[in-house]
Image (cartoon, rainbow, N blue to C red; front, side, top):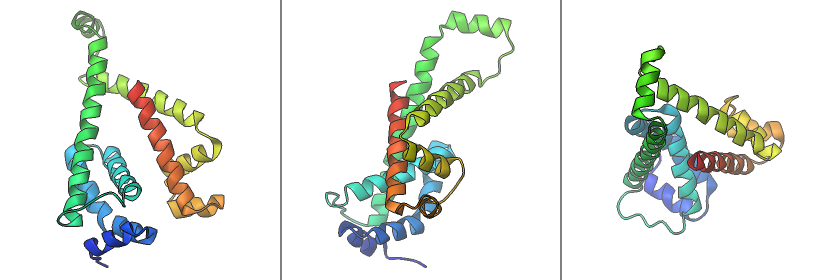
Length: 187
């Protein structure tokens, strides 16, 4: 099924959640592939698409699209992907600044070090921070986030499992991701 994206956008502006879902279902896969080309990271690409759609819904009344809605979506994904890459590089550079060149040389001389040791250390540190933030989430939000991200349940499955609305699931996932993002930026 192919939808008219511009007509769908008008329905979204009127507050029709079904239209947002239709737009997401129609475009998410291709937008994710596009984001992946920029980020080189599938998880980051998927998060980027979700962020774009959440922002699209939240600001639907104030967004003015001149031209096609499809072009707007791709531009929004492009901008968000570039921002994500910049944030990642900034985090990576901050880790590099912590270890002096002399210390790094000493580590290389005395220990078996591969080219990706900083990435491994950063990933472990980031993982610990994310686990801590997830542990601090309110119970329902934590449960929904875990079901979504780690058990790969769909929003509909989670909603039916927990006897809540799909909107509640989406909101809780958004809030959890937002807290994780904020926690990582403080890092």
